[in-house]
Length: 313
Image (tube, rainbow, N blue to C red):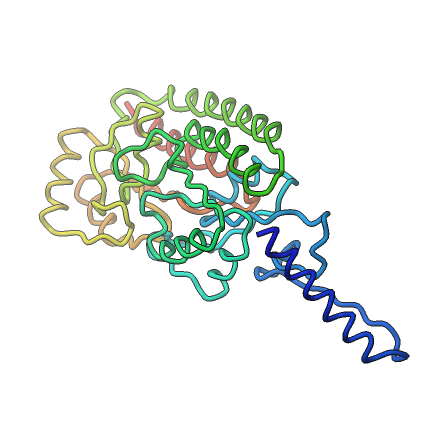
């Protein structure tokens, strides 16, 4: 936190004076620090200066992108989890735990997404680090943490961030967050227009795991089932489940199975072979090369709407 860095900065200043007295006449030397993540301003910088930006630590890359859009230059945003990794299975290192402890604000997804981080986040909160939970501010689908596949829900998170950031750091991001929200509203309308071109007969879909419920609800798709019937991509699949899924696909006329990049494809391949559906891979939990949420959601939804429109009749 800011106050922790000021205390540490004062201590380091005393040490520098002591060292200088012991080395009088030996010339001057400078010192520079790097943050625990090795990027941007140090979370425990040696200067502790008033011009140092506060540090916000986000748990996932997509959540980090949403926060960056809202805060702009008012804070440094660091992300714990690697891009494209499975947040359900990820576990923090000692370095990650230190990042949480030294943050001015932690932004987590919530609803059990960061299972391996819960103890570390709880400890940081107990030690006085403010924690903002994104899913406290969205219209939650019971048990489903994947709110970010619906940009209108991401906009709700952005609208709630200014109060949390101001309370934790003193920074005023109201204007930048409002502008980011307007951009998301325009993007939402653009995506809705793309899905409007999908025939009604092609709106039943199967997903890799239960990660696209918010998107489906927003843009008028019907979820027939999931290859892995779990909110985690590592759930178990039984032969009985696969038979039930194939039967449901046949009844609903499902023509596309969307599976997530990184999931084992053997099961999905077997299902499409039995049903003559098309298999389309999606990066539901990975940012594109430019690292922005806008490009992420545009690429995800256009890949889906194009696949559905092309297989509709």
